[in-house]
Image 1 (cartoon, rainbow, N blue to C red):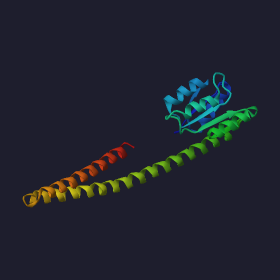
Image 2: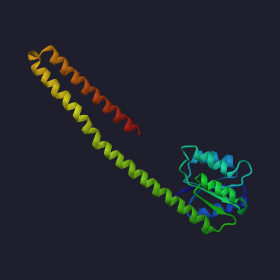
Image 3: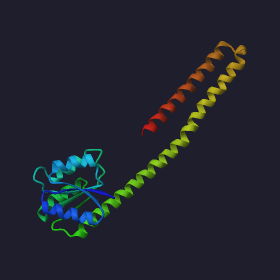
Image 4: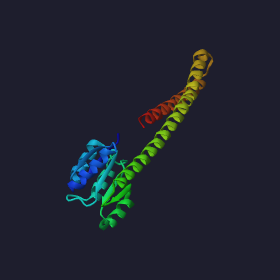
Length: 201
């Protein structure tokens, strides 16, 4: 069940939107001003935010900008509710990355279709990101073992040679072998560091 945050200071419109969304099976949370809406969005991480542009305390545009700056809500779809007189604000919001807008007076179908379309698009984008991450993980899991084996093979081979033939080797040859061992160990260490960094990602 998708969670929708509705930010609207007109109590009648707010109640109407909640009824519409609940009837469609959405979970709804609501705020009657922008500041409360921001706080609720950051604490509840809604799947989508539906906000009036013309709020009494801060504008819907300010709400939008605040949520886009926070990692918890940066990818949540954002839909503006507005009157036709606020068309310039709508254009500005869309140019900044808002996902859609609904003009008052609205029909139930307008609200529901807009929300479903944005949630569907977000789900598709999330799936693409998951696939990209999985492909990245698989490529790393194939690459790292190979890169580890190469320097490790050198370390094992040279160390075996050194152990078995050290009495027959000159000092310069021993130093040369030790240098090769040291370089292989450094290479292996770099691969391990990269692997740790990939794991963190």
